[in-house]
Image 1 (spheres, helix red, strand yellow):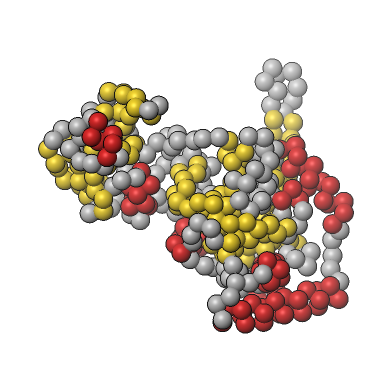
Image 2: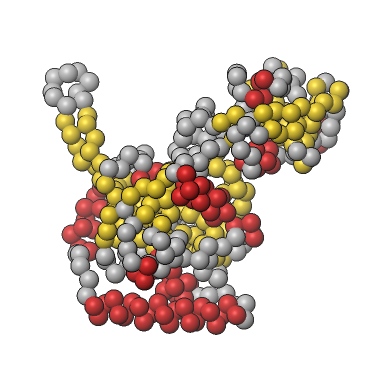
Length: 403
């Protein structure tokens, strides 16, 4: 299951701590500090509270009759729970020629996040807070407070923060079910693109089931693609459905020039729920690893090369020392090209995993994702024309798996 990348994927945090338009992100953050101001007036807070209350009443009425909310209703209802995440870090740079002493440079970053419960937990992206030494979150009333990292998972690009705040000051967003998301569904994104606080954009779900590369080069599966405008600074913010429920966490854009071209990606909220609960309970997440890389073949390719099944996954490579290697899984050695696509022939052909037919690489990743390290997975495969059943003990995914 070797990652395949097309185009340029950019982690959408406006931050000098990540690889994404560093200069522009710093400029946006500095400029915003000059005009936003700090502090809070009681009249503004009361007005926001009234607006949020009215939005909640309207939302409840519309949802009872099954009608979608307007973008404005979704925004007014969710805005109090969306936060601005600001980070600081001191990076020491050495002169490669040794002519000047080591210099310390302050780096600042900006992203988004949202409140998940009254206990003060906030979800954002791992790459938003990666390497940060100081983290502050700002709410819709301009109140800013320090936050600490409860746990972070580079394999899914999810991090959980915590703030010490009274429960009445927190407005958790309602989490939805990303398994019910369909192409064409209306969605709304809220975040802090380019430093502009709590900006709302809208669009549709362009595709589901995408796979994108995580910060540690592993793959995140079942990702939601949207054409809602997402830019640097949106990272960690919510993607909401027409009922105002969070269905994803905005994380990346695909672009050729660094700007939005209508290709944004959000981590599905069901993945985020599972990861966040483990981070809160244990501070870390363990991911199982099979240790093989495969290519899907359809009936046309199977017929052309006289394969013993009309579809399946050709094993292209196996990690030495992995569970797949120890179980004797055989990779192919012969490279052939059909209609511009290169296949590695001569290895095992996996046709089922734990009884589930395997027709896509994503399907195999999904089966593995529901396992724990040390558990076994049952693979049905063909070696030549002979069918075998192999039990593979899954290993533990390293923090920086092979790309």
